Length: 389
Ligand SMILES: Cc1cc2nc3c(=O)[nH]c(=O)nc-3n(C[C@H](O)[C@H](O)[C@H](O)COP(=O)(O)OP(=O)(O)OC[C@H]3O[C@@H](n4cnc5c(N)ncnc54)[C@H](O)[C@@H]3O)c2cc1C
Image (cartoon, rainbow, N blue to C red; front, side):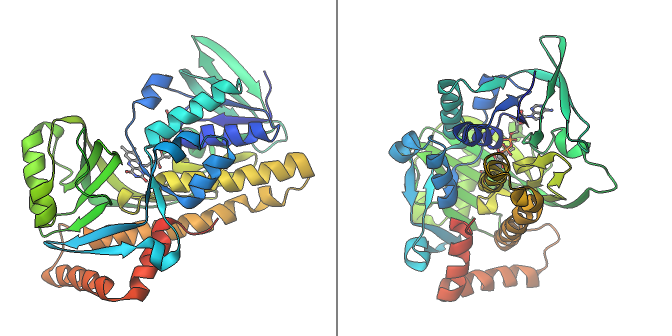
């Protein structure tokens, strides 16, 4: 078998790249370790920057998002019982779209099917070979049989635990990491969201986030200890704790219900450099992870795909390799800025185990400053809606 661009990973990054390439007449094949049902059952991100929204429309997968997604022109920040709004529209002219990663992935799979795009599921033992030559190839197993695909390029869209990043020569690869000493306990409930916009709440007891997927599907999070387990958190215990951490008006009006999903995610900042090695490109979580506080993980996967799709189009359609040569530096420049924003939001809103009373005061006064300063709010808003591609 042969393809032009072999894509490893059928998550949002891999599917979106495949879709954009196909529309430019460039042949791709996607290898995905899991079944489609498994991929579609994962509950993850839900806030899309406007750059990503445009890219999805360009890929021909924006129709349902435009119909069912909810445009947010602002967000609330709260400190104990006090809250204030950051008005994205007024401060920057921009907005974000609330549309679940699960729905987006479903749209991408449907679009791939409609164009007869090739996605091979439940492949095993994926290995990448000869990346430093002009003719790399990938081997894997499917239904117990060994297979080989030759290609021009490999796009590593296989997430943090994938094989692509690990294929890069350790003498070249540099990794930067910060692991946070807490996690996020998240629940999904079929209840109307407590607020029309997200509420990011800093509290002495820890951070809380009120988010949503649609008008009858809410996503709520609590900062918890990494030692906590799901079993320790009954639905009642979750709702009681959430009500303690969010402003009183929200706590009194929140509609609670049975959770339909509950999970604890650790928080990590991570960047791998370079994002290109020979004929391999890294995209999305394969190259970087952000704590979810700034809603940047999925959006960074999209901006990588934007740069890589342009680079490959230039290569195949214009015989110009400038985009390929500069892909790593261009993508990393935006990645590091989003890393900074996600790290600063995490630092601002969470309680850290080793935090001194001085540190807690600093967080409080930073939020008070943010409440009072248009300049500070503008900076937060322009990062939240997404820096330009
Ligand atoms: C639990 C969780 C919650 C999250 N919540 C948020 C959130 O609230 N907000 C936010 O902005 N971001 C969130 N994120 C981050 C966001 O979901 C990711 O940034 C996004 O999924 C990145 O897309 P991706 O395509 O790069 O990687 P992934 O979605 O991880 O897709 C990678 C794909 O590659 C496949 N794969 C892995 N290894 C192989 C292999 N060897 N061979 C073939 N296929 C392979 C995987 O099965 C997977 O389907 C969350 C992430 C997690 C894990």
